[in-house]
Image 1 (cartoon, rainbow, N blue to C red):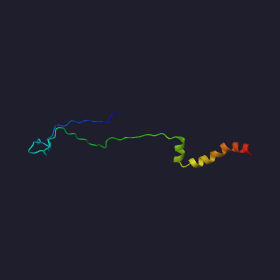
Image 2 (image 1 turned 90 degrees about the vertical axis):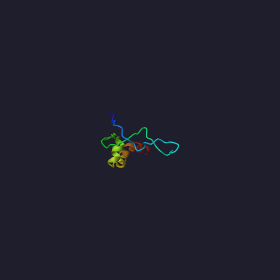
Image 3 (image 1 turned 30 degrees about the horizontal axis):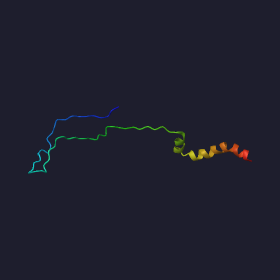
Length: 82
């Protein structure tokens, strides 16, 4: 989807309309003008999927979950060591 829009308006007289000369080198003449307008009508939505660890961390249970799961993984190793 493209959210760019170009609107052409009729040319308008500029304040810089005096050619610089040797007598008046500080004069300015505008040849091309560009007008840019930022509009708030564009809404950007970003999406991100959770991993299981991010979900557990968001609900505050990552630390507690690891403490509950650790005995199941390490108890067989502990029984072999004794």
